[in-house]
Image (cartoon, rainbow, N blue to C red; front, side, top):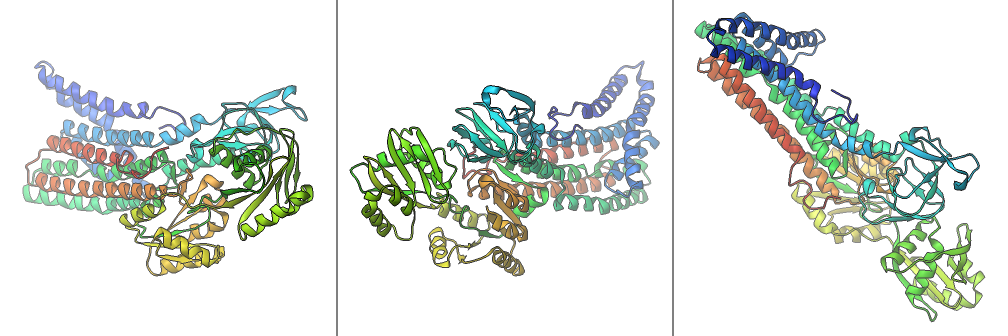
Length: 634
């Protein structure tokens, strides 16, 4: 099987050869039985084919036993050997087909589950345009492999190209399509000083980005690695299936002994062996788990491993951080108030033209507000950044200043009265003052807004079994309690340092609760690690919080926690269905075979049908139509 993420076909052609040869031998044997002249040669020919095609299966199982891997393949090995001894080649070949065909189906399912990795890797840039040392764009660029970019290199990103590594814009202004990484449909405007992440696409104008990390260490590469790791690791429910195989084999041998003692018919022993091969248990469970991980990845929910997926199905308590999780985590413009003759839109338009090239968080909010109002943003010249105070420049020939009161008052002393009025009218709020020649003075007030539809989201989590909801925040307690009440969250605590959040999570787990912790910042990382399963919002940069969490939401949408829980519950339910179905069907068939009602060949065909039915059931985990029905696919 090709390594995951290699870009190979999902259907493993090499793995298909062995079951194809086995099927061909069965068909040829059937044809020989129909031709009188060849019929005497059919048993011997099929026996030779069984020995040749079954030997690798037997040897692989024996080698596993010698290495200490005692699994249910032992039953299949015994069935093949018994079929050779009893000269029942047709039944033995069906067992070989069942073993190799089941493995092929598993690899096919894994190939489907690897589509998310392959799509991510296929879209990653292979070439980067590195500016020559000390030069500008006009001096030309060198095209190098993306993995050769070093920290500090300046890279040209042309319109339509993906940024290959995390870095900072040093030249140019443009809009970025971040939907592949965050799911956010609106473009992000960037200019000099603004940090950018790998995986986003430059939509408008050329940019020069200074690399802040190697491509292999950037966000996009970490996302790919998270998905690959998730598909490679085994979950507890898979190990449960493996443990089942250890005691299933002795039970099968006891059933064989009973059939032999009761009847003295060796064919009944073979019939019991062929129907007892528990491929559904060993194949369907990983197919369901990997399918669930793949389903989540298509929803931009990265589940780190099968363990995390299973734990998502078990949680009964959800703990939320507030800032950046239940709120957007970025102050947005709440109001624009003017004290001159101009309109609020005119003053905001002038401020946005000045702020569009700034990397300050509030500057981005001003630009976003102007764009949301449909305003045309012009260009500014003679822009000067006053560190920690604000920015000044010329916009359409007017001197414009955006910043704190002291800066604006020093450059526009005639506006002092208006500035003081703005301070009195916005006490306690986050604000920026604006003064523009011939436009007057104004104040822009910012607030961190709550995300949309959160009360309904909390109710849907309750319906999924997360009946206890808790809000933990470093914000003041008097600010946290009203938020919890408005959203329907049952408990709230404020004024918490990171250690306090960890203590709160551990206290819940000490009560026997299985805790789902949702956060986005570095200060949430300890609590994410302490929780039964942590969910990190990576849209604000990920970092250590993403590393500490078992689940990472790429989309800037906390309601996708519901998708994660629903997908986890669905995948685990299907995996358990497969285990129970395999146990009941195989056990029933063993009893009927021991009584002599199922001959070996018919038993082999019956077990093949059981295998296919149970594994096809497990494949439903990858295409559950109900998963994430509450939120649209990006």
